[in-house]
Structures are given as C-alpha cells and as structure tokens.
Amino acid sequence: MIRKVCGMREAENIREVEALGIDWMGFIFWAHSPRNVAAKPDYLPARCKRVGVFVNAGLPFIKEKAQEFTLDIVQLHGHEDEDFIRQVRRELPALSVVKALNVAREEDLEQSRRYEGLCDCLLFDTKAEKVGGNGKSFDWDILRNYQGDTPFLLSGGIGPDDRERLRRFHHPKMAGIDLNSRFEIRPALKDIHLLKSFLHEQD
Image (cartoon, rainbow, N blue to C red; front, side):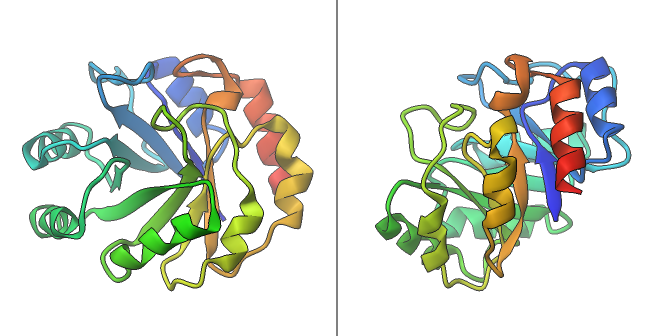
C-alpha cells in the first residue's frame, strides 16, 4: 500500500516525514496553492519517490521542475486531456504519470475511462472549489463502482479520525492513500506526531 504525503515544502519537515517511512512525497507547483513550492528546499527526500503536482501547467514548466527536483512522478491535477498526457509521456519517458480526478457522485467516475492505458495511476479527490488540500472528504462508497484497470490512490481530506474507515474500505484497484491538509500545523508544515501515530496504525 502506497503511503503518500503531499504538500511538503520545508527542509526539516521533509526530513522528518521521510523518516516515517512513507513511499511518495508530493511537492505542489501551483502558484495559487498555499503549499506552492516557489524555491527548491535545502533538502529533498532520497528514500521515497518525489511527486510533482501540477495544475494546468505547460509542458516546459513541468520539464523544468522535473529536472530541478529530480522527480519520479508527475501528478496532473487540472483539466489535462489525453493528448497532453501523451506529450508528457513522450517528453518525460522515465517518469510515471498520475491523473487526479475530482469525485462527488458516481457519474464522476466516467471520466476515468478517458485515461485508461495513459496513466500509471489515478488519484480520486474531493470535488470542490479549491484544487486539492481542502480537507474535505467524499463518499468513498462511490468508488465501489469503479471498474477500470488503472490502480488508484484514495485522497480527499483523509485525517487522523479515518483509521477505522480506511480499514473497512476495500477495492481491488486501490493502490494507496494520499495525506495532506488534515495532518498540518499550518499549510506545508506537517504534524509529525499525528502522522507517525496514523501511519503506525495503518501498518
């Protein structure tokens, strides 16, 4: 089970979160986010995969950040279409691609069909006015109707009080969880004690 912590920015906090043994760490490159990474931190993780999160970014910008941060994964969190994803794969063949999809109703799962065979993984997030990191959850039971072949990460306001809910949720294509705003002291600064306790319970 992949354990991803997203919205990281501060070097010492990056070290502390990495030491918890997570699998993926996300860096948001979107100026409108309070977790936007405007400057490269003094430390980047070496023991987990680095994920760059982009929202309707141009390909040159994605390539620039992929090189600067030595990214392993590109997560596309905007309205990127199939042709754009093909371009990303062509220009950055060594990187995995995750496509985030916003979900509120069962009908929202239909959009996943567009990305079959194009992405390595999907990420199901809560449909909201803000893009990501809004701390709001959605009805996970909707995902029981997902019948695609692409594995997915579960996102959208997962917090410390969701331990039992996660234990009860099962889907053959669920590859992991994405944690962010509900484990923060402030935007881009994670509460290590909360994260450690939660991750220990998930082991």
